[in-house]
Image 1 (cartoon, rainbow, N blue to C red):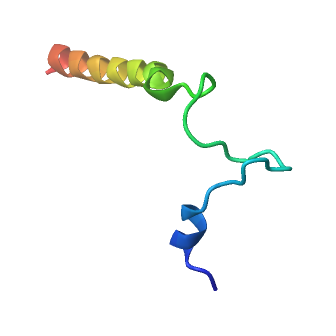
Image 2 (cartoon, rainbow, N blue to C red; image 1 turned 180 degrees about the horizontal axis):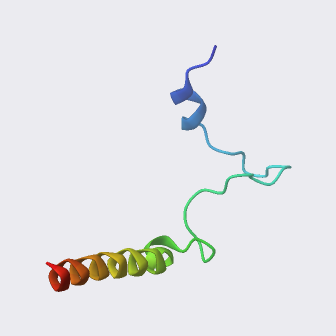
Amino acid sequence: MADDRDFYSRDRPDHPRLAEDRPRGGGPEDPGRRGHWPVWAVIIGIVVVIVLVTVLLG
């Protein structure tokens, strides 16, 4: 069986006939770090509510 490192070290040909199913690198469709801000906002909001409830009832 071929070594995985050998498989991933090879590049695509200059003129491939098939489209790449997993494009490499980022692009406009890749949100990067900016795409996860709603998740962090919800997590921080939950932590703030827990701290406020703890302080007010404690």
